[in-house]
Image (tube, rainbow, N blue to C red):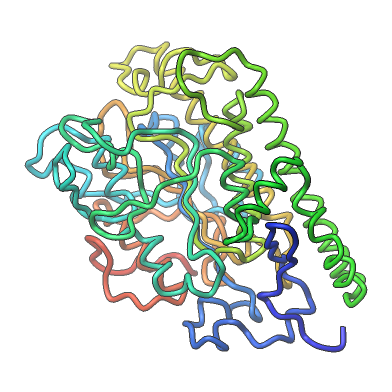
Length: 454
């Protein structure tokens, strides 16, 4: 390659705008952050490789007896629920002792599930109302998007795995807007999540402003790659051997996600229709739906389409059943087990299911080249929820995992025991610092979490 390749290079075709993964040819280009006057964390870490940040929300708490790890530091011992993490142990930091105080009643009575999701990324107390006068704070992902989101085509992406109402009373006098969203653009405006994998794929790769072309492409059921083939071949002629390999690997990943989305559409169309509208393109198996949304988040980061994302595995209070792992009673119902052993066993299976899917995602990030390292090396992926033990509805000692190195700014592979009642927002402040954001304080923070590096 005789000249550097811009990080913003895209392949364009009929209704398609397809960003590229990080290539060696981009290393000589002026870092995007410097070119636009953005903070260093927006794109200059790791030799110009950007840092990504994502928040994965798990509803209804966990069975903490089987969740809590033992020991501390690098020599900690995994619990039975967290055993799958052993496969990615070197990439994951487990943090205990963090608290979400604003999810507590604080004089507002029942409604822990609504407060759990509403406060999870905001650190603010939700106004108790089932009407339109909702109020909460800006979420940490949108705080970051305001400062560094302009460096990418999409400032952020919001994904989910469960449809939910956006209005009405969903939890003891709290609006459904609180239970349905974790991402908030302003104190009264949530960021709606995309639940259909096909819609999320279109958001990432559809060419904004070319709706007619997009409809034509979808009607033909052709791959996005078919429409950018000419530009891709021209680009390959200018790339080195290693970059051509990376580009081929990326195109293969895109085709695989497309294939799975289309298979889900066909499966959905073949199922008997109930007497109600049904979502299109959502796989029947929940594990496949979860994996698809994780994979779309990976593609969004790999292509630098966005560097900020959220994923709600379910709304808090969800009563989803998990037949594929032998759990036929609802999640929320089982979380109130009252020490019934059969119900506890069901919750433990659900908890382990969520950890398994997260582990798979981290494994994929760890196998995806990104600059001189892998995508996990330049990411911060937080996994957890706003309720600790689902039976108790408590909000201290939350189940929190943090994967990634943030471009060398985090030393993972350890169990960090924060002082009890340490605000979860202390961790968020530290993560915002590593994204290059200017943050004086966030939510109910009392300072930074200072143990992320050795």
